[in-house]
Length: 585
Image (cartoon, rainbow, N blue to C red):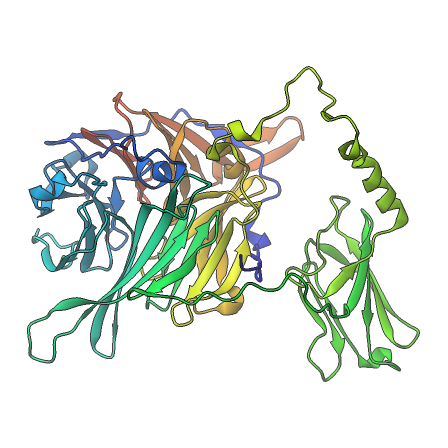
């Protein structure tokens, strides 16, 4: 796996260290129920689709699709093969979903058929899969208009094994209109002998208009690229211009084929590599960090370049590139930190930690050029804590009454998230990762389209909070920007054992979770209170309150789709579409 070379930079101005909790509000949420003429086309997993990856990819599929280009417009496919749209302007005058396209009936006879999937590519294009391996690219016209025009297929081709569409984008370059579509398959893998016998395949397809000037438009597949991995990605999206791909997955992906030709894989690095001398040494206590950097002999304080903020540090020689620069693992107190020159050839820096806490695993995020020096006291303490691992007793577990765990009895879903869980940016030209973030400690929560002209945002758990990250592929130095925070949502969602879907409003005014049956939970951002409230324990006035609301649907059928707009929440079951009015204008 490619080593991590990038770290997510949290915007501390978007964090609220004084957040207390959500307060349950009993305010009624207006709920409107639309009965469907035909059932939603739910495709249940077969006996052969038994793996955790099948469940993640198809068993937990969101059958409801939100149009990010037009407000309060949702789509789904019913059992008759009809693509149906509901656009809401007035809640009290909801009409029936209207048909915009119909898939051929014979596609439903495929033996290994999956659920139909839809991706709204642009304001005037959409990509549709019938679940049997056929891809349709549809010219929709301006979907927000009231003309109710039917969608026109301009590309229709069988691409092999059944797939679902993860993402698609549309762009024009040098007068050529191209569409990039990302497909997901879970396939039998004869090389996978130790695991489930299946592997995950992502296919990135480029379809372009090949017609010359004055000729009728004709769209053809111009390029096909295949990536393989062992886990279904939590997040997968293409760059707006098709120049790259971003994946968040528990196990790594690599490009294996381009247009049917195998991609040469790099030789694995030898186990023994030439070790270079470290440019700095560091050690720490629970209170401070001491750093020693080698400098040119005879260095004076005027020749030292040193800058320190709460989160970043730069050390170097005036007139030369910095020797050490980057984000510190945790915050320090710049006022209580200091540096001195020792023996005219090294710089000793003392950094005061903001607060006593856990030991740092690294000094500067992603920098491997230093060497950590452990004190004798720390070494003795670690040795004492690990003594039980060298016990001569075969079962060194002090809880002797409890049987030891047999790892062979564990399922895939019982495992702890692996250290290989990462967020990776791939370059379209080199097919290699350019930026890799280790997400081992950050649980993936959901994906949301905040701005349709940009890549979808992903929401990750950081400590107890949920942080929303906007990909910026055109900014390599700040490729993922922290743009919003849902206080304590990471902690709250962990307690919802029956949670099926999670999402948030595109303007981040609220987040919402839904269970497999009936219930949805809404968590609003803190807002000013109209009356004076006091915290009795702390004896202070409360200026803002974050409300939590619970909606219970009048249905006993499983929830199949769940989407949020700035004003409404849409919940789809097999026979009903519920519209919840969450916010007013």
